[in-house]
Image 1 (cartoon, chains in turn brown, purple):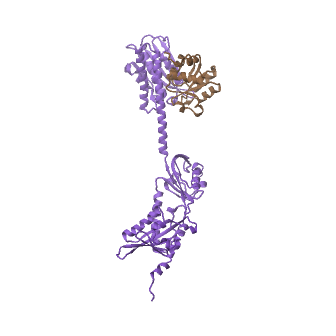
Image 2 (image 1 turned 45 degrees about the horizontal axis):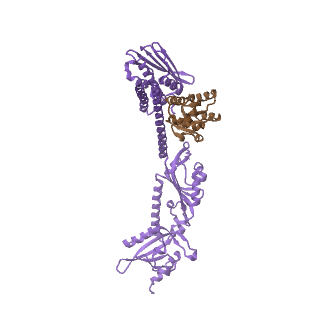
Image 3 (image 1 turned 135 degrees about the vertical axis):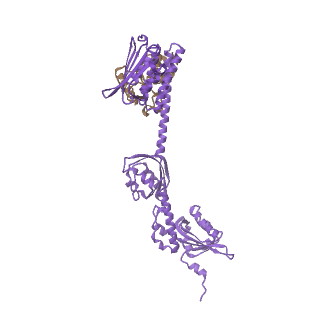
Length: 130
Length: 490
């Protein structure tokens, strides 16, 4: 089930290491599939902040990250900060749109749930400059 | 005996008198009247009173009404207390002189017996009023110096009337449902505070206290600046839903929201001498609005989230299914499982759902005698309840396809208990199938097993152990449990 999207962008997403934090199992599974379909390598999905920090410490530096804002009742910002310090471009996924983001992160790329594969392609493209 | 000349008498009266015709034009005025109004007789005679002494406001209306009553009833009429500004002549620098008067209006009959003139005796009581005046005008007590008022008997009646009026005013303001205060001077000394305001501020003594020094909790907030602005500029200020923190002596500081209006009180020269404060405690209303906004945001978020879940189920089911017909059936069944979990949760207003109820709901289609559920009531928080509902659905439908529920005899035993461990407890669930066909480990991981692992190990932070024994699937689940499981929010 590969969706049709702008080829130039999808080509650039091939082999991209995408760090994923999403605590809802079903949504995490779908995002994992979407990214695999795009030829990306998924790091995660992490379903909690603790796991995210651990995985980040052990993994190669990702090329980009997709972060659910609310993770198990906690906000994902400490993970976002750690990623930013390593120079990783961020995409936030939220049910509230960009207004659901803390002020300092408003400039980051966001996708609003529910999102399509095209939304993910566009958001990743904007984040990594593809 | 010399005849008494009434013109001489009229002119000699030390108290100001004047006479108007029925059109309120000046017919006569004695020197005392001319002195107090600073006018010349020739300027007044034949002229309309309200052209000479205009007042478009309430006091002008009261004066006109008094004349009207005299003309209508033929009875005398008294205005006990009439603030009335009169224009000063150019020679005295012009401008307005703010004065207080008491007026007695007496009808004078013409030849036909009907009222043809009105005799006005007016006394300037400005000095008496000022001697007792402060910023609390409607509330002030009448000074005992009223002996100075010339018509002693009338004055006493007026005083009573005025005192009654002031008392009525005072009661009205004292018991008003909104908060009312009268402040005097640059430090905003409280000269009047009504019951509602006193109780809002925690029953403190307020009258005589100045806001700047005596109410530090209020003075520390923006209100002080606004009071100063009104006092300085003479311009009213109002606000809606303004937050205020009140440090009540009897309890902890409380946050409130108030609608308020600060109006300047002017003296006779038009200078600000105080501030009239009105306020309404709108806390309940504002908090209800905030709650509603939060609820709407939350509803919006939940709908978005549920749609994202449905979308994921659709996408993953389509990918996982062997045929469109199988995809449709699996998709519908999964949406129904999601719906069942929501249904159970909505019965408890989304506080949680019982594990037994969740399992029973997903096993119901296969007959009550096929499953044996053993365990004490365990409440699952909303997120955990939804996840467990989806897991139970996948386990049951897998059993119906390949396991114990795929033939006529197989049975499912599910039992659970809470087990204390370091720092909390774990919910242990054992799902055992027996009597079904021999099963082996599936060749590939489908939606079901992926969901079980991702939900229980990822989302709920637990562990799963699936064994495909020859007599049926054994699934051991352990998830951290803190009264209702974590993930109350997402």
